[in-house]
Image 1 (cartoon, rainbow, N blue to C red):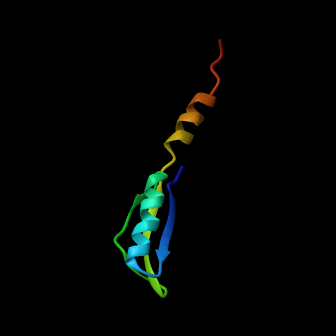
Image 2: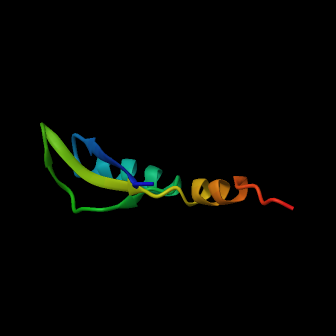
Length: 64
């Protein structure tokens, strides 16, 4: 499965750092530097769901 991608953005770098920190606490990883985005600043974040991969493997049924 492809990793999820999204742009976190805010009006100031200080607020963006808070947004990024909140996402990192939930498993997101910073994938770019902070850049201008629209009227504020933004940063690309990615998320790889390792739990889903484990669940998919455990759902396979073996024949006995």
